[in-house]
Every structure is written in C-alpha cells, then in structure tokens.
Length: 259
Image (cartoon, rainbow, N blue to C red; front, side):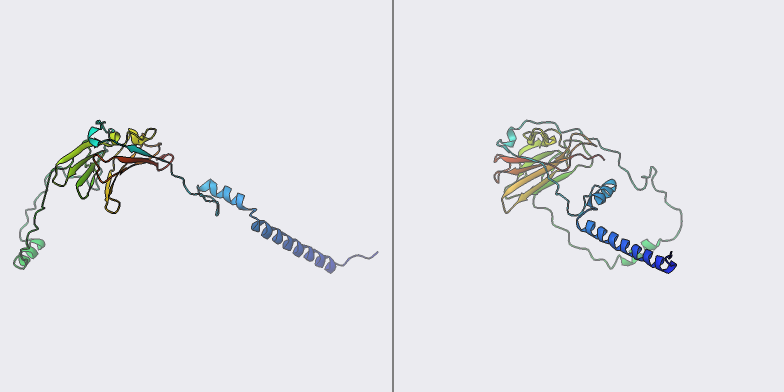
C-alpha cells in the first residue's frame, strides 16, 4: 500500500489554510457591507456615551407651550412675589485683607513714583466727557440679590428695564408707566410650566426695530438640581409694551438637569 509523501500532505494543508482565510475574509466584508456590526458598535458606544451610531442620530425636539395671549394692561396685573433666591457666599481667589496695608518705613523714592514725577510735566490735561442728556432712577432690586442682574432696551417711546425677576416700563423722560411687574405675574398664563410661578431671573429685554415689537425673557425651574429648565418668552402684540398685549411662550430646554 502506498503512503502519501510528507511534501504532498503539507501542500494540501497549505491550500486548505489559504482557502479558509479567503472564505472568512469574504464573509467579514459581506457582513460589514450589510451593517452586521452596527448593533455591536451601538452597544459598545452606548456603554460609554449617549451618542448614537453614525446615521441614526435624531434631533432634539424642544417642547413649546404657547402662544398664550395676555390681553391685559400691565398696570392691571396683580403683584405676585418673586421666588425666593438663595445667594451663595462669593468666593475670591485671594482672601480679602482684614487689616489695612502696612506702609514700609523705607527711605528714598520708589521706581513708580520716580517715573510718575518725570512724566508729570509731559501729560497734558484732556477735555472732560460731557454729561448725559438725561438721567433718572431706574428699576429697584426687588429680590435683594447682590449683585442684581439688570438688563433693558430703549424703543421709540419706551424704556423697558428688567432686574432679576421683575420688569418696569418708563417713557423717554423717565416717568414710570407701569411696574414693577414680577415675572411670576407676567407669565402666570403659562400654566403647567415653571414659568407660571417659578421664575428665577437672568432677564433679557430686546426691542426689535424691524418688527417694532418688544421681547422679554427669563428662565424658570421648580427646584435645582433634578428638574427641567424652561425659557419663558414674551413678545409684544403691538409697539406698546404697557397696554398693547403680549404673546407668551414657554420652551422646555432639557428634560431634567441632574447636576
């Protein structure tokens, strides 16, 4: 009986190995083209981040409430107290000194004082800036926050100022036309959202000269952390921010902020 030679057996095994490698390579390429690894990729990515696999991303849908019509003169709105604010102790890079600075008992003139004495005769007095044409006392800080967050804008006939959680409207001569009106009173019509009773400040006021309309906004959330943030927005129905009416909107910024 004849026996196969060692060289023939080795040649046969090599052909089997090469054929197996080519077959596996073809299967891998086919699965990659059909997206066979997309689920595995998504699982691995999902364990480390919230981003979806390529081609499967979806836009964030922002929930909006409104428009809710506010067809009232702002002077007729009741005063609703703002939400109490808790101010943390301010932190400083270096502690403030508790003692007045010590003056050294050295002698001679410092370098800075010497340079200032040399430049004293070179500096020429500059003309003073003219004073403002009109000044008046603006909106007071009704929440006791320090420092207050203030913002405002001027239109053809009005100046609207917001400080933290309330607004006040003046004419161009500084006379009060309405307010102060708290945001909790202004946005009370946005029921079912924090804008109705949990406004937290960071106000924003803008006059749009193209549309001849006013925009008033702030943010609101019931408690922090762990609740949804809302942006509360008011757009005037007419150029008159006092008696012309408003459209109110509430935009949910995120489902819940855990930190």
